[in-house]
Length: 576
Image (cartoon, one colour):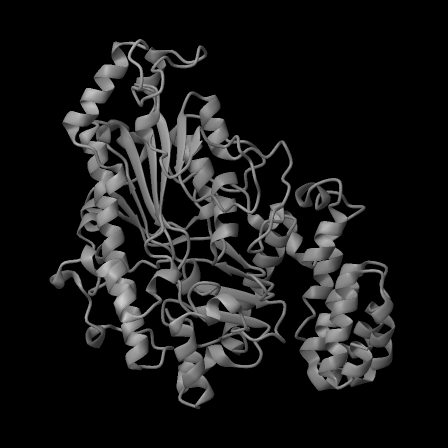
């Protein structure tokens, strides 16, 4: 990141001029006088905290054992850090992940789980940088926000020029640098365009040979797929150089030994069956945390240590507050994994909602071994039409191979017309999550336990995804989705979930579900219709009852009724 680099001489010269006094015009540095409530003697007691985040990568780094990765800067950082091998995003796309990171609450609790949206959040929910600012920290963000809500008071500076160097001298800082280099969009374009954009940033020996790439087993082995995969690794190498630039800035500024450094991605790789999916390929991220010597007492392991502790994005906000010596608001739903008071977790949870025009409602729970996924819209395929994603060369290639009948074995799994309602994977023996054990008798106890964990979490956190998106906003009118979900008169999660959990059941409960179409709660009516959608042609006996809902007062119920009728061959009545 060339814009972040200054020579040591230039920086010290600038700092010296600023310290000389306000009489020097055009200094370029803020007034070094700290806020009245924060004394200079207070500053040295606080560690600086730096987040270096990147877009759309799984743990494809040399320090994670990837033989193809060329990531010397991150590998060196790992040698001085704790390397977490069980770190997970709470969503497989950026906006809900970032909403969770900045608030310490699941996006599904705030109503920010869809990409994209603008959701109101209550005043009592304060993004944690605001709490750090109140404690005397200078907080900067360079520069992506994308939280699904707006709050201009989060940061001292959130811009492409934001940097800890812009703070008053001596003030502790929390700074974020969001590296966009590895975003899914960057692998696209002609060979000439990619070379013009990226080729000059790499030496010949840093380039990745498509012929030597190791492809995921669920991808067809074609020249185009290999080329796209090699491009992705090239981008990771470029991103690694940017990380090195930022770390050198710390050294130049002589603040490295008082700065705790986090490196992580916002979710998994930006390719099909990675990003947007609840498999580990979509949720598992690299996480390195370097705790320098003066603050080693707040780290559970020595530098270079490896931790298999389960860590979720919902834990990041309370962890930073813990490292900064601040109290953790009771509204936060995570738990600190570093700092003065820490705790561990038994499982992590992930959620997938709408992305652009592709609707989804899936949830997962994972412990160190098993992953359980509940697909609440099983009648929809994994791969839905999506204008943005369908423009990507790798998606076009995969669609072309699938249409030509060129997929075999596990390559076919992600391209089925429907999804199983439940998925269960033993990640110790099946790390690619391609052998669904949900129907295996020998795993019935594990399945039951994971079901309960997910249900308890959805109820405890007031999962607003139990309401279709428009209905959530209608019920939250004049308030916020978070507050609406805590109002029993507006939201009854247990009753709604009871019905949603029946989606995917067979036709034996058809009479009961037909009665549910007349339930006073529109969300129960909606999920009853989703049950009939998942039933396919077997839903025909309920046709007359479904037709009555074409005039339902709830828009989502009307739309779902029309959807089911069209699937049953009554599209003329469903969409007159």
